[in-house]
Length: 357
Image (cartoon, rainbow, N blue to C red; front, side, top):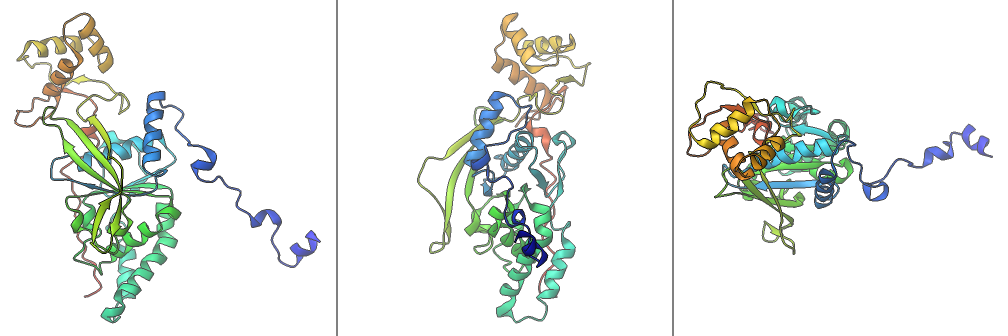
């Protein structure tokens, strides 16, 4: 009988079922094999916080409060903790960021957006939205799925992709189609914006799952705290509202040396520099002696000297970073979150592709 069904064109029984692994809730969370137990705990928290790394995160805040810092911090760590996730960006990171799958921005998919514009050419104004949305949906099911499936997508200046003042923008429709099918694509989107009101009420706001509010420490110039809230869109009020529950804080010092970034080594760049304080003299003398590991440096200065970790870290920042209201020295260099990206390289995303020529 089985042979008869096959002969008549009926597929074999095993071809009728999906035996691939399901969501991580079924098979367990898969981590990179080389991460520490502490990192595994952090990865688990982030994984569960952001719904198995699937959904839309809107990162908001004024200039200089760490929006791009959060996006790069999260994406960099996710690619370390879950290396099978594809990392896509809309701007090139610094070399220290390491490998990533490629770029996703208007310049990359310009030919596809041109096709969408041609599809909508000559269409009545009342039908433009429907035609453009259908074209965007078809793109996601074809080219977009191949590009975006199983990815973590980071978009700087997210409001430029979904501008509320350009509802017929092909890029606007494309992002709407991507976000509608985010669960199918198994994609986590991170987008930064100063104002939530700048985002389109049809293609962006309804699909936002989390809102991250950025803040910068007053005491520590390189300290940042990001408050994560689960949110939903209220169509009646045309606004994003937070769901019940306390915001989840994510805090870190972006100026602290990180052993997991690059080779993790502290390097003296200017050997002719004359220390201006006793702390600088002590730190530089230990570094010049060949100590290039942060933990080792802290341990030596705590056990054999009288400097606390806070004093050591503050001195390293003074010697290596550009701090607010202080003249940069750049005597040393060490890997930290600040060096993963160039905060000045904001991509030019305003489209020249419209439905009206």
